Image (tube, rainbow, N blue to C red; front, top):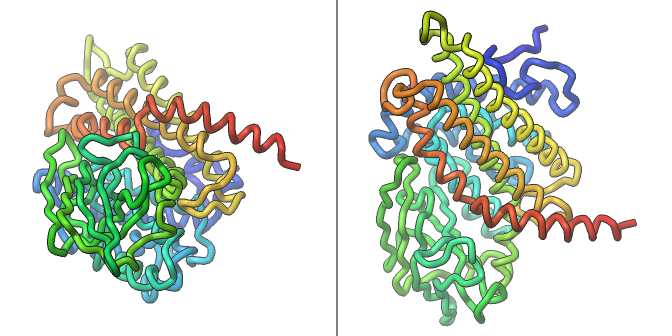
Length: 432
C-alpha cells in the first residue's frame, strides 16, 4: 500500500501525506483526508469563482455540505453525537473516535478550495459560534439549537466587534436590560461573518457594570422585530456574508442566555483558543495554495531562454515560503497534539495553551502574507489578474488581510502571547 497522497509540488502538502512515519495519524485520518479532498475537488473548487462573483454560495450546496457531516465536524462530533441522528461524518469516522487531528484535517482540506469567502460561507459562523453553545449551553439549549445546525436547517454567527470596539472587548457597549422574562437588546455589531444569512447570533452584550465583569452571551434570533442587517462590502470574501447587525429594542427570552450572567467575557476568551487554531489551519493551507500555483506557473513560464523555475532567485522564494509553512504547521500540529492529550474541549479553558494558540495564529498569518507576496512576485501580472493561472493568488491577496486582522490582530496577539505564556509557565512550574 502506498502512503503517498496529493501533490508532488514541494511543501504543497503536510509532511505526513508523503512520509508514513507519523504516529499522530492512523487509517481513519487517511480515510477522512481522501474523502474531504474528493468532495472539495468535485463539488466546491470548480464553482468558487462563480460563487464569489455572485456574492453567495447556493443554499442547496450548504445543505449538502451539512448532510455530508461537515457542520457536525466543525462543532466537535464527539460532543454532539447525540444530536446527529442520521448524519454521518466525512470519511465515515465514528463520532466517538473523532479527535483533534480529524478536525485539523477538515479545516486544512476544505481550505484547499482556494477561496476564503467560500470557505467561510461553508461554515465560519458554525466553527466560531457553536462551540460556545456546545460548551456552555444547557442540555435544553443544545437539544433545541444544535440539530438544525447539524442538518443544515439553520446557521449561526458570532457578534463581538462593534463600530467603536474591536480588540478591547471589555468596553463593548451593546446593552441587554432584563425585563421580566426577556432581555431588551440595543446596539450594533459590525463585521459579523455570515451575518447576512445567519438565523442566530451569539452576541456579547453588557448586562452589568462596566468592564469585563459585566458582559454576558445571548443567543439572539435574527428574524424578530427590531433586528436590521446591512451587508458590508469588503475587499475580499464576497460570499462570506459580512454584515452589520443592529438591535433596536429586540426582545430575547431569558432562556437564551448562555452560561452565567456577567461571565461572558471569560467564556469568549476561552473560545478563542479553538477559533485561532482554526484560523491558523486556514492560513497555512491557503499559503500552500499560493505556493502550488506559483510553482506550477514557474515550470512553464519561460524567461531569458529557460523556465522560470531554473532561476535560483525563484527557487529561493519558493524555499522561503516552504520554510515558513513547514515550521508553522509543525507548531500547529504540536498544539493540536497538546489539545488532544489534554482532552481539550473546544471553547474551554485549559492551562498552558492560550498564549500558544495566539502565537500559532500569528505565525500562520505571517506565513500566509509571505506566500501571497512571493507568489505574486513569481507570477507577476498573472497574479494581479482575476482570470488565468494567477486568479487564485489574486483573490487570496484580497482575502488575506482579514485573516491577519480577524481573531485578534498580530500586534494584540503577539503581546498577549508573552503575557499569557509567562502566566502558564509559572502555573506549570508550581504543579506537582
